[in-house]
Image (tube, rainbow, N blue to C red; front, side, top):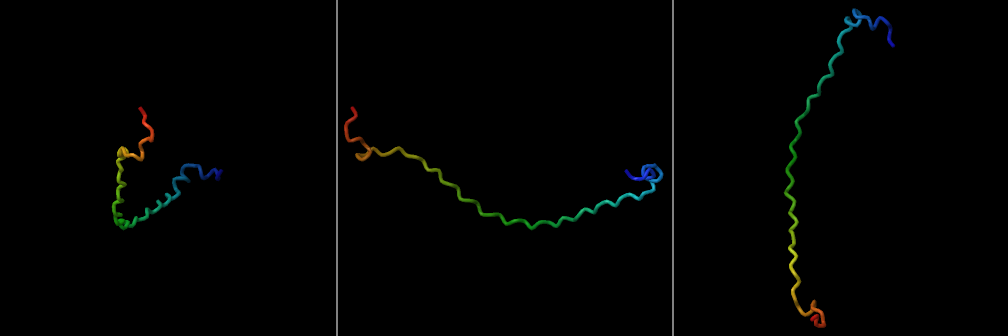
Length: 62
């Protein structure tokens, strides 16, 4: 606790106001160069397997 004088009103009123902190001026930022667009990944359509003799079972299924 400070001195009792510090809390009494006339004394506190005589104290000069605290200086406001100065706001710093913001420097404008250099605009970033836009990056080139990323290439899109091509969606591969799955096509059904071709019916050939290699993926056909070697015995009849009927």
